[in-house]
Amino acid sequence: MNKKTVSFLASGRGSNFTVVAKKIIEGDIKARLGILISDKESAKALEIAGDFGMKSYHVNPRNYPGRQEHEEAMVRLLTDAGTDLIVAAGYMRIMTPYIIGRFRNRIINIHPALLPSFPGVHGQKQAFDYGVKVSGCTVHFIDEGTDTGPIIMQAAVPVLEDDTEDTLSARILREEHRILPESVRLFCEDRLKVSGRKVKII
Ligand code: GAR
Image 1 (cartoon, rainbow, N blue to C red):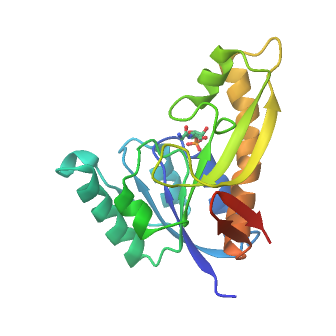
Image 2 (cartoon, rainbow, N blue to C red):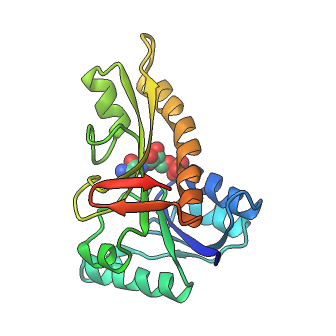
Image 3 (cartoon, rainbow, N blue to C red):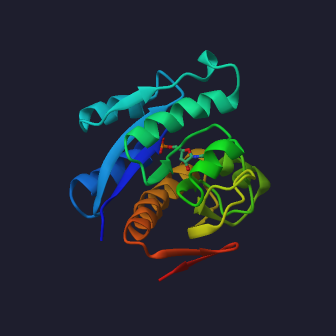
């Protein structure tokens, strides 16, 4: 089986990016590390990518006339790096049909809630404020909707009586760090089969 090249999009602290990249470096996920792109110059993820010896780029949306032009610049970098899979690891921008079409069923996103509940931003806070007793996280392929793409894995997390938004978020993050690398590993082993809304693990 040919090794796949995995690249990353991240806007912030980069803990999900870190766990996946480490597993690739350590050989637990048999893949090649591609590049990391951030839309935010201050993203800690850019610094971490440098520590891993990866090429990293700040592609500033403000430098482009529109969202598609910004994505065209990202797609050029991703394609030049031979990217097979894009992992959106805390990437906080909505993607347009342009990049989604170019990487159909090859962009994986981690979302900090049990979709289809609480899509969009601040999934943990939305769930906490709503008063649910169980929340969690979802790994899914990105499609044209907001957090609507076919679901690869989910993990449920209980909401405890004395939770705050922060303690709940931390409990969810631990599960994110488990199911995101696991999903990437399955993708890299060609074990995810998408059929309509369903993702079968083969
Ligand atoms: C994670 O909790 C991830 O699920 C969330 O951003 C955080 C990034 O943390 N993503 C979204 O909310 C996407 N809509 P990290 O930078 O430490 O991985």
